[in-house]
Image 1 (tube, protein in one colour):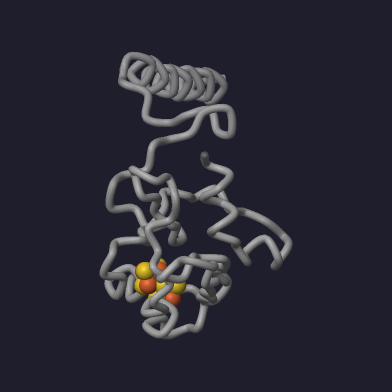
Image 2 (cartoon, helix red, strand yellow; image 1 turned 180 degrees about the horizontal axis):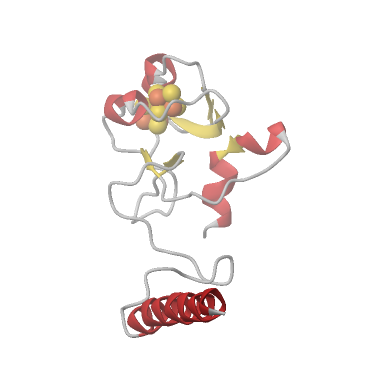
Length: 146
Ligand code: SF4
Ligand code: SF4
């Protein structure tokens, strides 16, 4: 009989202990969000895949198609191309594709870009079962952000 009461006491003690923890956390600041309905703002130093940077005046990519990022990438992830338009002295960016499957986020491309035309994005929501989703057309992405 005494074992029966000991078990009830132990259960009640465990329940009270659990409820104590629940109540304690009810009054603490919330540190989680209801993903995917809510998302967190990633910190400045977060490294998502690279992205093109817009010229604030023209709204066009700052990229001058020098190809330095492509040459600096140890994994060969970047494909850059430009067109020379009639009457223009400089090339205009026509293609900027990133193969994110082999990118190690090393930052060599960002460091090699003297005009500051690429930066790390804050993108973290990239889960997919399709390999093609990791070949990212960064020029199209920039245009869609307008
Ligand atoms: S290094 Fe910069 S400016 Fe040169 S091609 Fe790459 S992104 Fe464009
Ligand atoms: S972060 Fe490194 S691996 Fe990724 S694209 Fe840039 S240079 Fe290549």
